[in-house]
Amino acid sequence: MSARRALVLLAVVVVALVVVLSSRGHEQPQATGGEPSEALPAPFSPAPASSRPAPASGSTEPSPGHVPDQLEHDSHEHAHENLDEPVASSAPAPAVWDATVAAAATQAATAALEAFARPGSEVDAAAWWTRLEPLLSTAAAPIYASVDPRLVPYMQVQHVDPALRAESDLLAAVTATTDAGAYDVLLSREDGASHWRVERLRPLDAP
Image 1 (spheres, rainbow, N blue to C red):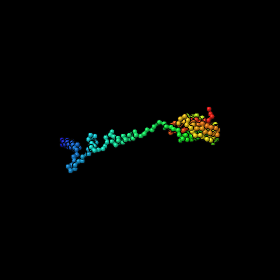
Image 2 (cartoon, rainbow, N blue to C red):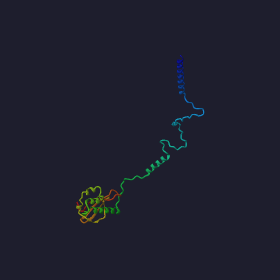
Image 3 (cartoon, rainbow, N blue to C red):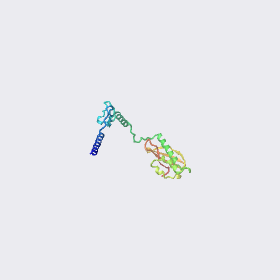
Image 4 (cartoon, one colour):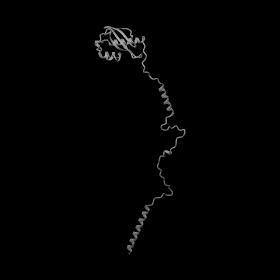
């Protein structure tokens, strides 16, 4: 009986120890009275839009979609400047016939006669046409483009008479003498500010 009682007492003691240890494990540690616990910082959260401070009454910060007064004023001034600029006129310049105009027509006819002359063997057809084409009107250029420069009768221009008015101030007639006979040149211009261009260049006795 004494041995059994000792075992029972031992079992009671073991159970009591287990209960005590278990209760101590569940207890939360408490801060000591001498050391204050540190508080964790609160997480940052942005202030809502409604709580942001409104701009001061004298603030110059522009609101969305607002056009500054200076920019609007400059735009209006620029628009007025554009309206004040003169518009280029497409009207033809008035044409007159005088000594200056006649001299310009004579010079243009002389240049065309010399460019049209039969070239020497050292000048090919391409070079001959490059010199002649700018002196012809847009209507005459396709016609004279088919001419063989080796078949032009004359090689030298001997004399060019002064240009004469032909029917209007936009037409001029010139007669020239070459080593192969006399030639007739008809020139035209689009208006009073345009250059003279050759419309026709042919022997004087041609039909």
